[in-house]
Length: 437
Image 1 (cartoon, rainbow, N blue to C red):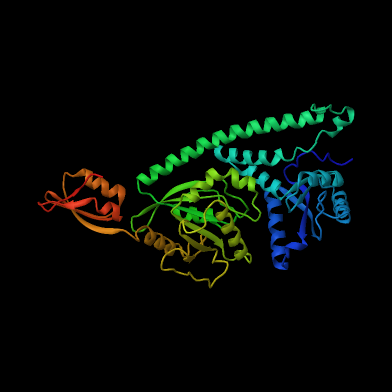
Image 2 (cartoon, rainbow, N blue to C red):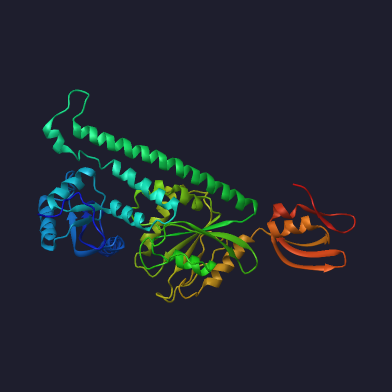
């Protein structure tokens, strides 16, 4: 007797990975192999080991099982041969397909969405991250309540508007899940308000935000740590970082920006996760500059870049209103010969570097300094030595490049944005003073 299909899989369970290739999708050989390798890395990230892997061409997807009857039997034989308690399917399954396949294979069946949700659930650390993953999981589960208690229906049917006991159990579970969903959404709304307050505070301090985005395992967290000397968890695994992190980054010219590290994207990222992580992804949508980190050594780097662009468009970052985007071609230590591609307007530029070795980091910092100061003006101010208000304004809203006191006059060289520079005017005594806003 095999394991009950309704049981959840355990840490380091042995598994079968099934890779459906729908004929209508016109898979290229290299893209298909790359997708297969990525999915098996996802399985490993979910703390399971692949005993076997099967690539199946699906000419006509069946609504009940996705696969043809012969393919279902082929997988069933593998499950029996390896005594695997779980089968991962690299495709989104409908609730009916999942249930039918579990019966046919006598094993737990997890589709691509369910696997990614499992990984996210195991990696989330902050309260916000846990809430977001739970919300995504509940939205996924509520559609999976497909007559799980049909054995009760055989005992007694329903009458008219009054459903049988199985139907009442499903509705009860749905009600409980929806109640929990509303509670989580309420908590996440508070998180969103808190983030908005924090962003407003940064704007008052004139701290522009730069967000790192990219395909999972592109090296965002390694780059983040290299730039900010932080200790964000970075590993050669998919979805090593889930919880957003922000750090102050001091640039070589004295300018400052707020750098944010975000969750990586992946092909077919579940909509439930995109929706649930909107509070986190707002850090990206509100950024003034986006650094798109690419693993330039990966053969599928162009496909991965397309996935990132599609995801950015899904959260509203497309069209003329989007912030400038700079591509960061990471891992040049694995692919020598890659050179940066500067662009006059910064938007569209590409910087080649290795976050691991540090090669090219100075070039990125120089570009960030250029972006921060592209519209700035350098003023030579003469302040009254006792004018602490004007000096504090210079430090808060600009970059003080030099200052020297001569008797009762403080000479300050400061870089300010145009809207702040016009706040200063020189009086008849030859001193600069800060006018009220």
